Length: 372
Image (tube, rainbow, N blue to C red; front, side):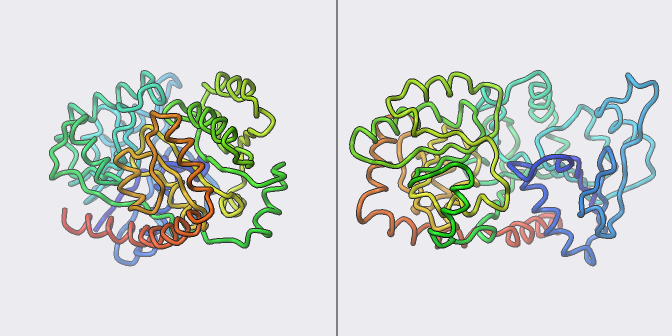
């Protein structure tokens, strides 16, 4: 079976979010390269190790004059001029340019993940995404299979993109095998390197409105007034809309105990999870919620919002709160830090994390190819 993978979704991106999912899926498919005739398609040569695995590599042709050298036009030019033919072409993001249906393949597979581009417009909206949403919604007939990362995400895709349910396949992300519980003292030494000097509550996410960090800060302030003593540590990259978030933190009576860390080395993230007394994920909109699984696997109790995807993925192992209620989040933090609750949550979380592996995701993707 000839499979073309649009690996430009990975190039030059840190292993986070959809780029992480794409990389993990590609690495799993590489384990089957004796069974699959794989081709990686992207725009520019990179030094990424996955391109040194002996797999055929294709670069979209550069166009001249330079004003024509746009990604969309380079794709279209390749589709119309190549002699290559594939059984499957797969995109790892919901970023389909007009005329994607001319891809030289019998089947087109797209990782839509969820419908966050529509359901969380304040976080994701811009003109290119509006075009992508239009293309997916009105030209989905050309998509053979769309991949959702949860059943909740599948329902959103069907509702918002109007793709027939039989075309939307659920393949859970992995993540449970990438993190392990680390002894508290050892983990805390790593945390200290990031300026964390006492027990803390951890949040990990981009600083986007739908991540609900403003309510988390308010809830943390309330929980402090009820007697908790931990710091609040928020690890997340800038999303261009965090000035008000910083200002809100400064207005808190516990401002000195609210710490923002913009970047944590990938090899340190496991230790940071394990060092935390609690992980809180109060997101308003998710397709999967990978940090929840990472925290579970690190042996850290989790409080998460009760939205459908997180309720599904958490599987009863997280303490659920109403993300629209500051008091509910504060109560969840207090309860999860109580005398008996953390051990119960840790045990449930470790068991739940073991369900989500990238090997399983890769096997399910391979099975999807086989039945197209």
